[in-house]
Length: 573
Image (tube, rainbow, N blue to C red; front, top):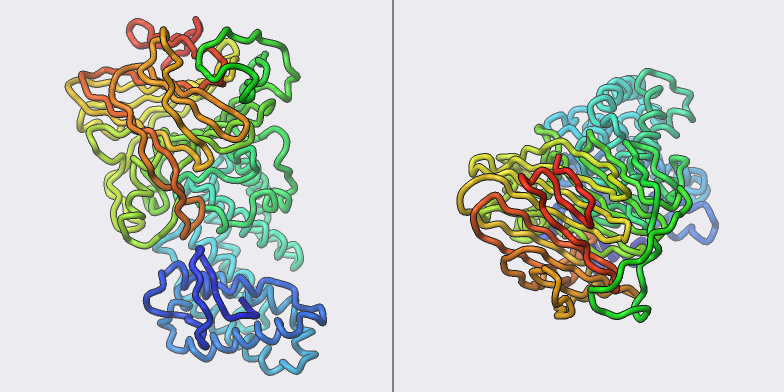
């Protein structure tokens, strides 16, 4: 960017046009925010070969000062203002000496004077109306300015920041270590902010109440993040989450003193005593869905599946380290009632990795602009969950607004005779007399079973959505004759094949939708849309089994108090 003047953010490039488009009409607000953040200055230009880059960086900062003079431009909004203050200060800490050496002393004085004005503007515009991660960014910038700027207001900024930090840590970091907005992406961003503040205050010798509370909160947040990542080491794309915004998760965890490998140590963990052999790869057995079961064998404790329940956040994970498989389950609220803007209609949704590869995935986020794409990516149909009577789980509107919110039941998880399970309930359809309960089970033969119980009365339409990663191919299978399926499909990804079988009636259609792992990026992928209509109560079940494995024998028990899977009863509650 420094060499060419071509700026690329959110997978949208703008060629060099002679002037820097700090507030250019027609560009998305988030794109302009990224330009005004100055993240690209957060680098070390001290080596002699980077002198040209250093001069260009200083020239861009001077240009910002010269062309953002009214206080009404995009860059003066509190959020980009907060990020730019921190990035400029980091830039100056690293590069002030070489800048002096190339005769840029007056530029440094101008930037320091501008930083004082920017910090004063931020102090007057703290985002107390938005709170959550926005206010934490404001607090971080105030504390950086207070610690690093030689200004008359520095002590006040630092003291105010520390007091606000103490209050917000108690409010925003839940007992299980999760961030209150329930977005894995913003969780990772907040964790990075706390790590920066921890390093800053340690270097400055600060020891106030807010600062003292940083290390335990950092530890809990890092443990939470390690609990919910996929085997590839990255976050699930639940709620407002995308790759390329927060730093890579392994880097964040490493800064916090953790590694990706190993057992999670937050939440409640439950270990079953035994594990079956690895599923077959393609070519090792027939491609059909029916076969004789493999015998169970003992495995080392650290290779056995485990369930981790993060109750306060509403997340749970079922992890099988022996074959790099993991399911991440979302049964939490959209977010705090005062700030649900980053929440989606994803109650009882999940993401699933098998053999280290993402297989069942959320839709992700491609834009924050108010548009049909933004509405879809927040909607119920964009998530691996159930919709009743065509009604959204929450009343979503605009880009970040929510009216009616879903009510969720208690999140639970455990092990019954080597069967790992998680379960939760959604009460959003009480006006229609419908409650949706979902239980997801990992069997000892590494079959994943998703059981949806719809309780209530009267005629209703129920839709279930299953979204696959773009690398997963799906084909209808007729190899399941003699088994009580609704439909069967063969899923292929890499060297592996699995069978997805539905149990029950209804109509299944294969659709093309999109996957948005990054802002500005949409990839074609396959979605299964299962539509059923009839009298409640009803049970819809589907199972994902390794090719060559006999599908699990699934029978709802009398009175619907439990479901029987391969002769083992898994209770509904």
